Image (cartoon, rainbow, N blue to C red; front, side):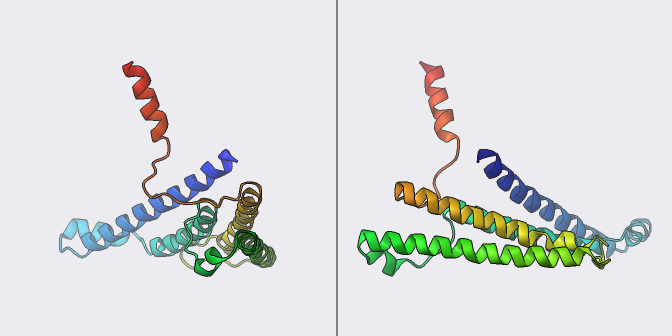
Length: 189
């Protein structure tokens, strides 16, 4: 599971970093193309960065789909649980499991419909307008992200049934910090 967790985080972080870099380059290009510096302006106008916006949109779609699965795993999705938390523990637990399984069912349906759509899209020659990549690659984010999210809902449900605990995101927690503190205390002794 750790490999999948790290892969998920790596994909999200890489897409976020790449999108930031692409937007930065496109904005700098656009700014310097407008400056009346004869040689530089002529050279920059020849460089085509019209693909940057389309690429960023696709990266943000992929980032959102994988980010949603990450949100389920870490418990950072917003939820309205005022009524659920006021119920007696047995009823509360039943509603939580029902909600998690409903989320898994919904994302499994979206993933299956998305996979069917991608399969049919792959049978065509449709490409994106600027990047000219096959559109099925772009839409592949829907089934992959949805199935990962479905898996995360099932994972959280199983963990909740076994332990009675839901993932809770602690904004002050820094992963790996305890290990470094322990290592520093051990090295100082």
